[in-house]
Image 1: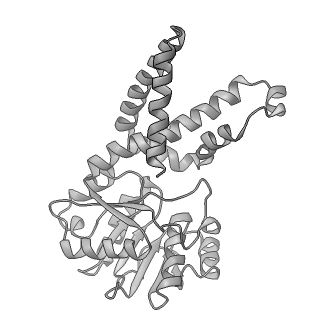
Image 2: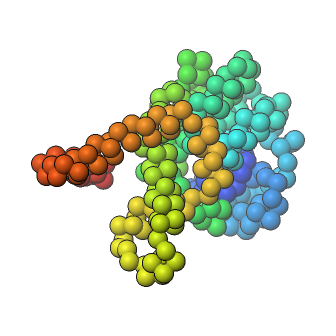
Image 3: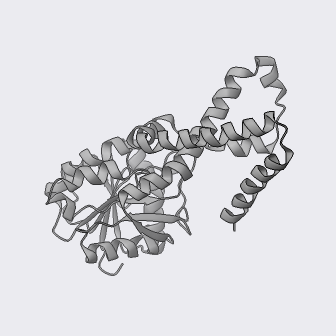
Length: 287
């Protein structure tokens, strides 16, 4: 982080705000500029010491930034990147925090100049809550951050970006955008689809009186917690990773159909094995 003097954060919400909070806490000498169109939000970020200053548009003010993080909805990232591209100094690095990577990276890679500046990132951190108010300086502590590496990626810039995320306390995984999107469709996006579907199902199938009884335990709250996520954010994620998510849904249907079948057959042995395999995997991922 020795060479990083100034950082720009476009979109000072939950994820962007947490970056600013952590940098200002651990590296107060680094100048952090917030960028956005909601001036009240930017003023709040300034008050919370997530940024040192702010600008209300992308037209200027980022010329001497060493690293720029685009922390906006997926559907806006590519457009914002190309808007700021003319401002960038040669050694600048632009990254993002989008939950899908292939659509963004493949579009930017079509431009030989642009792809020299952009290295995609996906921090596996967040909350069902939104906004700078929900940000904390330790949001990225021990979180996995996927950094996208391509054959054309500038190695010096890649190492600088890796050091940046490590400075926030994150653990880094390098992979291609295609592999990233295929895996997170199963491990992140499908779970949200299932949580939302369960909440949708209960909303439609319980009567109003049954809902008032609240006959459920902590398990239902745990299982549906992520369904509280912002629908607009998740719309972007689902549309941008549509094919991988649809494939995951279809494979999951096969697993559910198999479970349904062995229940219908009263196959106690296979029901037990099914539940135990799920139990053992759950134990593995919580170690």
